[in-house]
Amino acid sequence: MIDKAHRQVIFASSLGTVFEWYDFYLYGSLASIISKQFFAGVNETTAFIFALLAFAAGFAVRPFGALIFGRLGDLAGRKHTFLITIIIMGCSTALVGMLPGYASIGVAAPIMLVLLRLLQGLALGGEYGGAATYVAEHAPAGKRGLYTSWIQTTATLGLFLSLLVILACRTLLGADFDVWGWRIPFLVSLLLLGVSVYIRLQLSESPVFLEMKSEGRASKAPLTDSFARWSNLKVVILALAGGTAGQAVVWYCGQFYALFFLTQMLKMDAFTANLLMAGALILGTPFFIVFGALSDKIGRKKIVLAGCLIAAATYFPLFKALTTYANPAIETAQLQNPVVVVADASTCQFQFDPVGKAVFTSSCDVAKGQLTRIGVPYANENAAGAVAVVRVGTKTIAAFEGAGLPAAEFATRSVAFGKELTAALNAAGYTANADPARINYPMVLGILTLLVIYVTMVYGPIAAWLVELFPARIRYTSMSLPYHIGNGWFGGFLPTVSFALVAYTGDIYYGLWYPIGVALLTVLIGSFFLRETLGAEEVD
Image 1 (tube, rainbow, N blue to C red):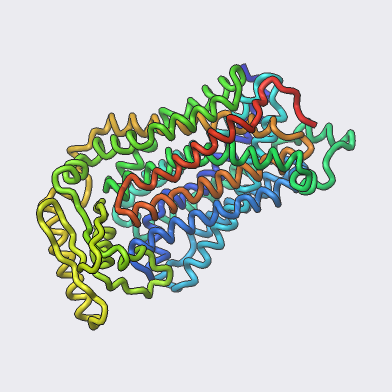
Image 2: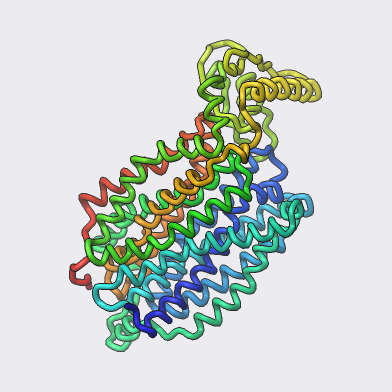
C-alpha cells in the first residue's frame, strides 16, 4: 500500500502533468481542423502534412527544454522548475485558442502557431524529468516502478481528457465546432492551469535534493557532468538508442498513429474514432500500474524490450485487422478491384508543396494527386515513356499531360479526370467514408486496447529505469535528454514520417515500417549494451 504522504506526492505531481499533456495533445487530436484553419494557402495534402510538422515542431525542441530545465532542476530544485514549465505550457496553449487563422492574418497565422508550439515543447521538455525524478526520490526501496508508473499514466490520461473535452464540444456545437468551437478546448487550459499551479504550490522540495544540497554533493555544472564526461554520456546515448527510441515509437504508434490511421486512411468519422480511442484508453491505462509494479519484481529492461519486440512483430496484422473491422469496403475493393498507377516513374514527384506554388503537371502527378486527395490506396507500375493511367480493377482511366496547357484548360481537364476517376472508384466499391453499419465496434475497440497495452508495457517501467541509470546529482538533466530525444524526435515525428511514406507509396500500411524498424533497433541495442537497474546499487 502507498501511505498518505506519498499518495499526496504522486497525486500532485501526476495531476499537474496530466494537465500539461492535455494541453500538448489537443493539437495532435485537432490536426485536421488546424490544417484548414492555419495552412489554407497550400493544397489539402500539403496542409495536413504541414499541420503534422507543426505538431512535430513542439517535439523537436523538447530536448532543448530538457537541457534548459534539467540544468535548472539539478541546480535549483525539482519543485520550482516544474512550476515554471506548467505556467509556460498553459499560457501558450490558451493563446492557440485565441490566435486568428490564415483567412484573417495570412502567413503570420502559421508562423505564430509554430512559435507557440515551440514554447509548448520547451516547457514539456522540462516537465517530465522533474515529475519523474521528484516521485522517484520520494519512493521507498523496492517500489520505484510502482510509484513512477503513476506518472506514466499522465500522458494517456492527458490524451483521454483532451479527447473527452473535444467530444463534448463536438456534441454540443455540431458543425460550428470546425468553424470556431475547436478553440474552446484550448481556452479550457486556463482553468486547468490555475488548478495545477495551486496544487504544485503545496509541494515541498525533494528530500534527496535537499540532502544533497545540505551535504554539498549537488552538481555545480550539471551539463558538463552529464554530457562532457564519457562515462555518463555513454549511458545517455545507450538509454536513447536502447530504451526511449523504441518506447517512443510504440507509444505514438499505439495512440496517435492509430487514430490518424482510422480517420485518414480508413475514413472513419472523427467522433467515432475519438470515442473508440477514449474507450481503449480507459481499458488500457490500468496496465501502466501493472507493468510498473511488475518491473519492481522482474526488472525494467526485459518488460520494455519485450513490449518493443511484440509490437514490431504484430503491427502489420493488427493494422490490417483494423481495416477489416473498421472499413471492410476498402479491403474488399482492394482485393476485387485493386488500384494501380501505371506511369513513367521518372516523371512522378512527391506530392508535397511547401509554398503552395508548385503545379504538378506530369500525367503521373495528375493521377497520384487525385488518388491522394480522395484517399484511396494504390500500387505503382513503371511504364517508361507512357502517359499515366489509373487501373481500377479491369477499368482503365487515362490521365493527361498538363505541361504547357493554359491554367484554365489544365483546371478543366483535372476536374473532368477527377470526376471520371471518382465514378470508377465508387463503382469498384471504394467508399468516401466508412459505413457505420459495417464497423465491427467491439473488434476495433479490442485492437485499439491491445495497442494501448503495448504502450503501457514499454512506458510503464521506463521512468524507473531512466532514474536508476543516473546519479541523483545530475539525474534531472541526464535522464531528460534521452527521454525527450526519443519521445520528441523518434516518437514526435512518427505521424509526419509515416503519413508522408503512405502518401508517397500509396500503401496505407507502408508507414508502419518506421516504428517497426526503430523498435527492433532498440531491442537489439538495449539487449546487449544497456544494464538492468533493478536490485543494482545506485550509481554515484
